[in-house]
Length: 362
Image 1 (cartoon, one colour):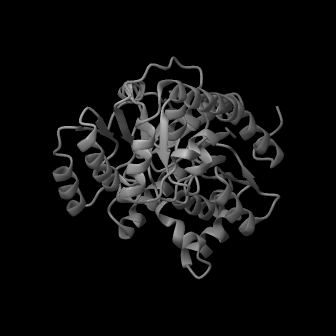
Image 2 (cartoon, rainbow, N blue to C red; image 1 turned 120 degrees about the horizontal axis):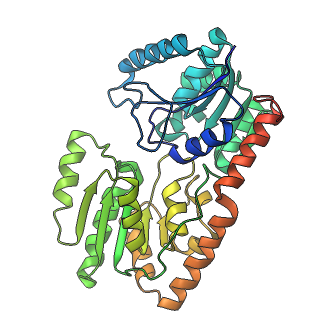
Image 3 (spheres, rainbow, N blue to C red; image 1 turned 90 degrees about the horizontal axis):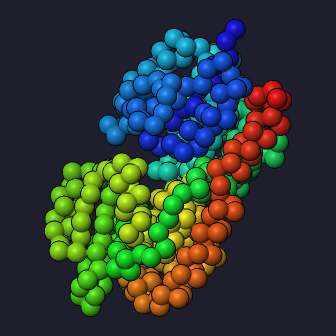
């Protein structure tokens, strides 16, 4: 029987780095390795379309999505699954009863399900505990998620990995345009996009040369979209929409300040690692996931989820002299290289997979 490993997440855009790295790492362990997601990425191969999986239509549409996944499993009969994100973790834990594959559950973040998943009275909490318990291993990316999973499943199954892994062997720009700010993430209210815009407008009054670039997948509802597009009608704000990897690189190269004042259930936001790797100051909150993704030098710039606090951090960053800016950002870059390098992360995945008998020893 052919061994077939699925690396599964709702979207092929999500978790793109670690899934690419795992693909390269696992190709000599399986006959076939496939990506499963709701669209095709230009930098991946062996992809399977799970149409509509990144659901924005509500709970009723989940039945259709689930049935589509069942059909994919029937057609290809995977022997191993690496599943990203809580919804997929539940689906794959349930289907493991019937398909008998080995399962690695990666909780990259609790996301919008965080309150229900951690509430012991919630049905979702009990479904998650029951079906995820069938996994060979369970992997978290930040301390709070690890603690939650450890309480649910115990020490023999739960592991923490520092991140998805990042390619640290890149060219980077140290001479930044000190007036360029950037928000680059999914555009939702919980990630602080409206607070950023308001704080920027106040800062612009005293520093009219500053620029705020906004990029990312649009995930606001219709009312929020109307407010958003009205609020970015400002001479200092540039909206780029959803951008390619090359465009993201261009934006990071000119940016001196990256903002993510999130209260969302983050796993470990890659944009914060990328920003530090590219020698930018990051302004984020001390919430789980975000706080795990910054160096000690960046704690000074942490903010609360408010316009006033974000404004204070922006002004604090803009007022840094060049020597201080360079010192802080270079130390933070070295921290990312030492703790989040993709080769280190992939080695840790393999160690966990071997220890929990998800894969055989080489």
